[in-house]
Length: 194
Ligand SMILES: Nc1ncnc2c1ncn2[C@@H]1O[C@H](COP(=O)(O)OP(=O)(O)OP(=O)(O)O)[C@@H](O)[C@H]1O
Ligand SMILES: [Mg+2]
Image (cartoon, rainbow, N blue to C red; front, side, top):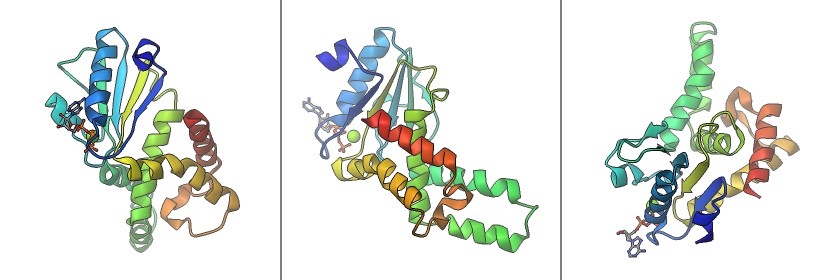
């Protein structure tokens, strides 16, 4: 199979529920790792079962898979990503700004929009931040069923448009809203996906 003989740096396994995405993503990851490639297997499915496949608790951090040399896995968890995103923004100002202001920032960052942007931020970082994935030859994505994944893949262009137009309520992004860094990261994500 071409995708195994000449594997690109990024491999996506997508499709409807239950068609075999996780099975084939894991099998591909093992095959490439056994061939000596350094592989990062990433699940973007909020209901990931990649940990179950390898009998390892993975969660929202890169975790080496003991049974397979050269294989590391990560399950992007929207809730954990949102918590980390809030902490990154709020922790530096805790005890510096008045408590009421800190509390209102936390409230602004507690909705579904923040959860979506936080998970998406981790996903785009994997596509665009070469330092983050420098240790890996291949990054394999095991995705959630089609609807969720189409939304995820559309987010880079959706958010780029949103940021470019500078309209709408971006308060759920926190102080990062409109920063040039985010803008160029989303553009780079679109380019990587192309
Ligand atoms: N090539 C195959 N032939 C037969 N059965 C398979 C094949 N690939 C996967 N299965 C079985 O189909 C079921 C679903 O597989 P899997 O979990 O890999 O699908 P998925 O697309 O990741 O599902 P989900 O959309 O829920 O994430 C499992 O029971 C698996 O063992
Ligand atoms: Mg699956």
